[in-house]
Structures are given as C-alpha cells and as structure tokens.
Image (cartoon, rainbow, N blue to C red; front, side, top):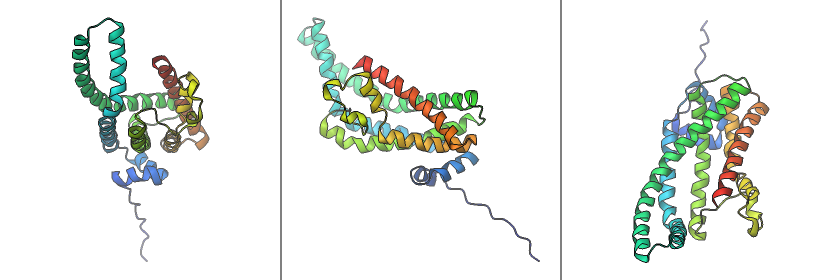
Length: 236
C-alpha cells in the first residue's frame, strides 16, 4: 500500500505578495510570517515617492517660493538679493526635495515599525522579530503609496498638495487649518485601508486575535494622527 505524502503548499513569490497585499492580505502575510522580506516593496515605495515628488513639485513649488519671497521682503532684502536667493533656493529645494522624498519613507517605516513592536511586544506581551514587523509594515505601506498615485491628477488639477479622501473634505473652509481639521485628514480612506491590512498582518506574525491586533494598530494610528495634526497646526 502506498504511503500518503503530504504536498507542500507553494508560497507566493514577492510579486504575488505585492499584488496579494491588496487582494488577499491574509495569504500574503502568512507567507511573510514564514519567510519575511521587505526589500522589493521598500524599493517600490522609495521609487513611487520620488516619482510623485518629481511630478507634483512644479505645481506646489511656486506657492512655497512665493511664501519665501514674502519673508525676504519683510526682512528688507533688495530685489536683486531676493532674485538671487530665489534662484538658488529653487535649485537646492528641488534637489533636496527629491532626496527627502526618497529617504523620508524609509525613516517613517523604521519609526512606525519600532513603535508598533514596542506596543505589541512590550505592552501587549507578543513575540516576533523586527524583520517580520518591518516586512508587514512595508507591504501595508504600498496601499498608502497607491493613494498617493491616485491623488496626483487632483493635485495637478487643483494646484495644491492638500488633497485627501477623509471627513476633513467636508470641514468648513474658514476652519480648514485648525488641529481638528488636520486630525480628521488622517482618516483618509487609503490610510484606513492601510491600517486594516496592517492589523491583519500583526494578527498573523504575533499570533494575536483580530481585536488585539486592532487595538495595537489603532494605538499606532492615533499616535501618528495626533503627531501629524500637531505639527501641521504649528507650521500652517
């Protein structure tokens, strides 16, 4: 009598995992739990961020440069000094803008993964590796990047980077720069989608129940939403 030999389930490759994070996140994160990886999604995130910045920079740069001109006028600078400073600032701003667009997602992902691991491991008592947390964070961040790409045509059309699909859209225009407005902006539909998917990944790699994973990710979301709202309120 022949012995039954169980066949191994084929694990999706990295490109199937990238598609899967949008269509079947559970299967994707189960594969990541077995073999964590983050390099390809991280490269995609950086490339999309740089391309997005390159495309929208000519649209948003004039308004930013005009604010700088107004400050220089207030400081009593001559027209010649202002023109020289503006020309230099435009060149330097473009270069550093693209560099920042490439570096900032990596920094944000590292910070977010670190905070999430602190919440899940130190506070909620879970155990996993940082590589798994960073991998899950990187894949879920692809949803945020998709949201950025969707918003590009609207940014170009309305000539403002302040585009979002959140309750803040319906906020009174005269109150559109206060703390609550910026806080509500965090509830963008793509951000909610991203954090829901992230919670699925956390539940899998930490072996948490879905409610427990939701609590961990909810705390992370509130930390970033409150910090972002505070910073935006100060500098707008």
